[in-house]
Length: 557
Image (cartoon, rainbow, N blue to C red):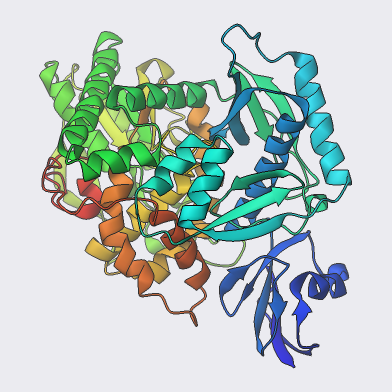
């Protein structure tokens, strides 16, 4: 039987003759000397498969290691199950929650179900990690079992998994549920797993504040635990998101679905918008009280930077200021001077693509009361245009600047630090499917971008998915390293947003055919979205909402 094989990240395909019924794991072993890192999964005819899959017909096969986003999630799911089993084996009467990304890992809590119990000790943390490493060394297989929804509900009730049971109790179109087991311990996961525990070689567990960090390699270096850096402000942002969730009475998807079914979602939307407005006003007060003149806003793709910046300008006007709004995009170097990246392609996201000197000269001139001819970048012509925005400001006016490099000191080296106020914006959702299945922040951002790209830029879902790894690579290089420079974080997530985005994204994802490379990611996103009820009527969302930047109807765009 003939197959076509591709080993990531190479682009060439090779034709092979293989035995019918060969297991993917067996095929991987035949090419172990040709792969850079451990293969975790594969795409078979563009469909994501675990390595226990057998090949019974001619097809294309693409090996995936941890550098691939889907394989990276498989590593996380598998590590999570090992962690849950280790806690189960070493402790009794505790409840484990997998909460959010933090410090290059997952922030998790272990809470006793007995009121008078003491907190988890340092020695218990050591015992949990030791048990995890024993489980890995024992090479225990991950056993998958699919059962119908009714049987799954009974199993979850028997296991005391009440949030998972609540999700299935309402008919949301899920017919079969996947359980994974490690020996006697079983749990529900909506993603795939590696074949056995020996695949999960690299991790660490450490105490952090009121919980624990389960850390693992970054996709860029799949066999090394990244250097530890305490992301205190990110922790505080997620803690604030948890507070917002409690105010709205929504911690899990089942809570959100219940409000949608009961018709309570309109008040929920209004409350979420009010929390955004209140936070924006608080930030405006901080800027006013500290008498800052240069307000710098940065965040990853689809964070809602433009809408937030303009809402902030309104709140500054409420405080008696008349802010000037600018985007660093207008300071791109002319297209012919754009530097090339390591692949020989124009690097539009690197700092070298910005005319930093001109930007600093203009900002200092404005602060000194001079009139400045501000550029507007013509993206069709690929060059800056002058003559349309000649501006001067007085000594009380702040300048609000939005751009991906805004928090990088190399973007504003000639501006006084005393004048700067830095804001990092990103959606930090604390809404999870259940206690053990997180919703990655990046999934929400990709859905935002997919809907916006289709609505306003004429791009297909395929093009958004195809470009997303490169977008993420740019974020890790140009944005995330500098978020610790921020004076404040703004959480741009709305707890209701995935239920709204589902209506727009579902048909776009369904339109991707199996012969297209983006098919496996589309299937993964569809499986994820099926847990959500859909908010069909989004007319209650106000026209200055961050969500309007993506679904349309924004007063700012």
